Image 1 (cartoon, protein in one colour):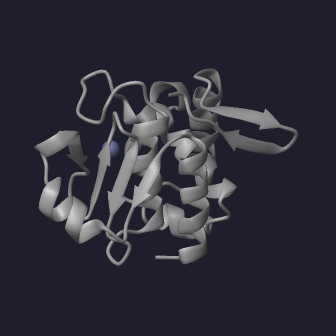
Image 2 (cartoon, helix red, strand yellow; image 1 turned 135 degrees about the horizontal axis):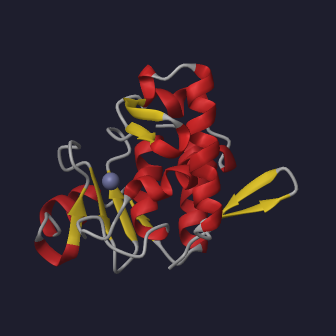
Length: 172
Ligand SMILES: [Zn+2]
């Protein structure tokens, strides 16, 4: 994974009172914190290579196996949602615009971000697009979806506008 992007994401995470665990992956996570021990929530479909500790604001991952866009998603669970990943109150789609803003903020390549989000299902009546995978959207649909998601994130206090820039915030 791109080391410079990880470092920027780590800086954001630390600024928000959180912590990345990567070098200690094998020792700390795989051996000691394997879910459900100690409140670690594992991201689905990642083979124990990515997990978050909601209460302690820790993101643990194997940098050799995890792509930076997925790391941003896990950060969203910790910083852009008031309820943990497995809570019924958690609606990931509410912070999808935040993920988009974080990707831009750390100067990730957006083509890469879209690529690693290609099977994420989006849609909604407000934008007139039924449930579709990001990878199947045309340019116009993609613009509509992300404009909508960014507006939702701004309303929820997850992003603030500074001139032309969108600054991602933490809400907990
Ligand atoms: Zn999730």
